[in-house]
Amino acid sequence: MAEARDRLGRMLLDAKMITEEQLKMAMDFQKSVGGKLAAIIVKLGFVEDMALTNFIAKKQGFRVVDLEELVVPENLVKRLPRRLIEMHHVLPIHYKDGVLTIATSDPYDYESIEELQLAVDAKIEIQVAARSQILKCINQLFFQEAASAPPKEKSKEELLKDLEPAPKPHSEKVARFLLQEALISLLIEKGVITEEELVRKARALDAGGEKEKT
Image 1 (cartoon, rainbow, N blue to C red):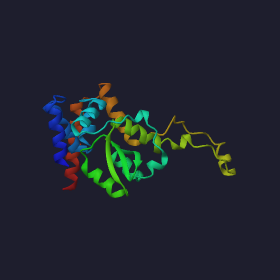
Image 2: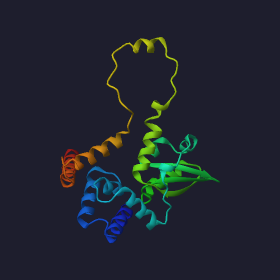
Image 3: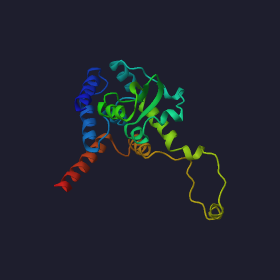
Image 4: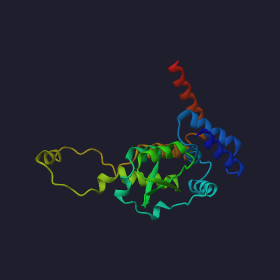
């Protein structure tokens, strides 16, 4: 898997989509806090999400799927364990003749794809989608389902509880990983923190964790 990450970094360098300094910063960030290299490169603003998606798809010979134009049936989503969908940021988008098509933004994550293959009784086919679209779909499928559910008849206890002061309203439920990514992007965009400061802080936290282990 490390070799695949190095390969992606080299390809981006050769295509002059990132610099040596940017790649080193992204890899340092990955070493400190974890995550996928492609996602970190986008998160730090080095390459736009869709540009990276198209680049990876072209290099690997995969088809790019636009999830904005796709409706994923609920029964199809159930073919993959929710835990794996959220952990690996993938989405099942099609099933036919024993072949389950998966949308991912990182076809270089071979370990994740292997784990998905072991979890389903079907052959897996890969297509590439923008990571932002995949995360948005996951959020809509699992974290906003309560908002779209039809109202049910309330019990006496629930009716009494309605008379209590209501908590501050939330417009919708949002996945935790989306909030984290939005916060990092907003801090950089507003100039509160630079990319270098963010990586330096991640390194410091990582070093602190290593000291605690020893």
